[in-house]
Structure formats: structure tokens, C-alpha cells
View 1 (cartoon, one colour):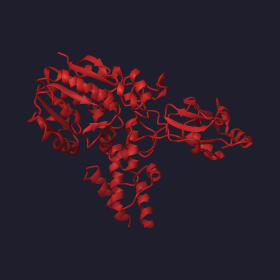
View 2 (cartoon, helix red, strand yellow; view 1 turned 90 degrees about the horizontal axis):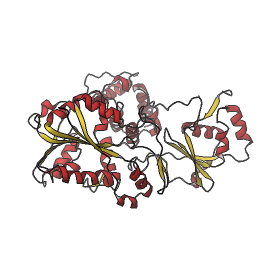
View 3 (cartoon, rainbow over the protein chains, first blue to last red; view 1 turned 45 degrees about the vertical axis):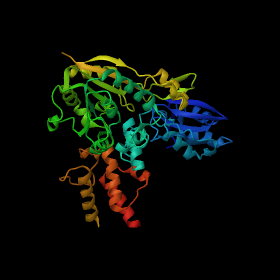
View 4 (cartoon, each protein chain N blue to C red; view 1 turned 180 degrees about the vertical axis):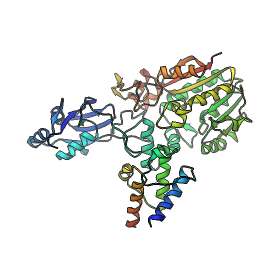
Length: 393
Length: 81
């Protein structure tokens, strides 16, 4: 064991925090360590490789042992929008402990600051309960597991408040809702509309304020039960919800007929067609899903996709005056769950559809009062894209 | 005891994964069961805890790799109670 080598992982950023503290941010795996700045001399020994024994000797000779703590968190209920780098901002100097050599090594290796091989390997998720590893969706599932929360409940809690009657003051409200409300008013008059993956029907009921008819469908019967109770009884009368499996429309032929709709919405749904680990069924059968949706569109109908942007989940740093993001992956995604522009356009082309236009909705000014850095970053970097798609004739 | 545990777990698995023909084996992992993904795993753990009236520690859940590991964990809690 004494001959084992330790290597500094250059995927680590060292960020001065003031008061003699530094943050070690592993940008690929989104792990964070908060430490006294003296830790820099320790990890500096491992740049290019250091024998474990030599590293231990350096530790033993150090007059003061390094103080550090794992500052990684996944804020389950606040979503990655407000914690895209998984940094636990509640940790402070009071949390720091002088670490034994073994504990120091465990912490730095667990958080991906040091590694035993060169080049460093991407951390592999070995079980569903293996935290801070895997894609964003897989990590949500792991956090839900630890909280014994059904992922379907998590989706609702992180997005809505007030008994599902309002959207929490997050980018969901300041970008997504702001954009959709305006779009509905401009585009839905006298239209027959379908909302695929409507969930508990919040946006679906807003569509009904403008459209001629609106049908919301979802595979989750609990969501549809809630939507019916919440929106249909006192609704405008042109709104209905049904449980429908989008893979098999033969079960819903009474409700959904060929070329019935002017507009079909997919709101925060499309990306699941590209996530092979979280929803393999959707990934494997995505062409079937598209063909089914396409069959429901009128000849001049529009499929309206509002989806997280490829730049979503980019950790942001800097200040509200000068924010910046760090892009760690695009084509070969291990954490991100959104398709690239090429994947999007190629897939639609294969499905005999073509893009009419792509919009990148802005964030409202009032978001600044909730999160000034987040607002500054999202003013520059889009978080959703809106894609209008039509049949290629 | 062992047979009861195996049978109880098999019933839970069949219910969670909606497969009445599922035959449980110790070496079985998520790769061997069609609907065993990160979502249904949450339902599985919750169902096992409720049935056996136990609450596993998260570190223990993180170490589960196969059905045999889950059986050992349930057995450990049964002995404690």
C-alpha cells in the first residue's frame, strides 16, 4: 500500500472564501470541500502524483493538521436551479475539524479531489443508494430514496405551493410560467389543444382560459385524479383530463382522434425521451411516442416543446455583477439529461417533423429579489428552450 | 425463518414490480428485473420497511447490491427486535 500513488484531480477548482477558508469544488462530480487554506499545500504535493507514504510523511511533519469538511449537499426541495453546484452554503468555520491522516485521505478521495489512478476515472454509481453519482435524474431518485419520498411527489413539491395552485418563486415561475402565460394568450384562441404529460394540470387549466378545447393526459393516475378534482369541477367547461399511455393510443381512441389538435404541448417532458438510465422505456420507444403525437396533429398543427435548455444544470459562479458558468459536458453526458441541438433536430427529422422556430425564454426582473446571482446568471444563460415543431409535408 | 423471509420478500417484489411470476434469487440485481429502476427502487425499499416494521439507515441502503444483501439486512433487523 505504501507504493500507492495519489493524484490531484485537475477537475477541482480552488475558490477563496475569505477568512482563511477555501472551497475545493470538484466541477465534474459536483462535490465540495470547505477547508482552511493550509490544505492547498497538501493537495499541491499531489499535483502530477505523490506516493502515499510521502504524503503521510508530509502530513506528520505539518505543525498544524488540516481542517476541512464535506460541504456537498443536494437540496432536494430547492432543485438544481438554486443549487446547481451542490455547495452547502450553510457550512461555516464552526463545522471544520482537524482531520486525522486517514480521514483527510477519505474526504479528499470521496469528494474527487485526490484519486488513486491517472487519468482520473469518472465516479461510477454502484447502487441506487450511491449518493452524488449518476445523472441528475438518478441523483434525484437517490435523494428521494433517502427521504422515503416518491419521486412523483417530489416533482410537485419542488415546483408548486399553495395546494398546487401556484408555482414557487423559482425559475419555474420567473421564466417558465411567465413565458407560457404570454404564449397561451397569443397562440391558443379558438384552438383545440392537447397537453401531454400534464401532471396535476396547472398549465393545462391556464391553457383552457384561452383555447376552444383542452385535454390533459398523463400516465400517472394519481396526478390525473388531482387534476380532475382541482381544475375540472369549477373550470370553464372546455377542459378534461384522462389517464392515457402515450405508447398505446388504441386505448384512447374515443378521446384522441387522428388530426384532432391544433397544438400539442410537451412541457418539461421531451427530455425524458433522451434519458436512457432514468426512463429506459421512453428512451427505447421515443420514435413511437413522436409518431403517436404527430398522428394527433392537424396537417398544419404545431407540437410545442418547452424543455430544459442544454445549458441547464451548468454550475454558476462569480458574482451578480459578473456571473459565469462552467460547462463540463455536452455530447457525452453523465450528469446532464437534456438532448443536444443535433440530437433534437436529427430525432425530429427521423420522425418526419421539422422545427419552425426555437425561442429561449428570458427571466423576469422580479427574480432578482429572490436570488440576485441566479437572476444574473439566467439573464445571460437560458434555462429553457421552446421549440415549435410541425409536420414535414 | 429463512423460507418465510424469502417468501415475504418475493410477494413484495411481485407487487412492486407488477410481475406475479417473478422468482426471487439471492444473486438477483436490478439488471435482472425489467421494471427495477431508480424509481421503483424507492417503492421497493418503502414496501420492505413497512412490511417488516423496520427503518434502515441510509448508509445500509447505499450498500445494497443484490437481493441477498437485502435479505441479510432484514435478518439483521429481525434479530435486533
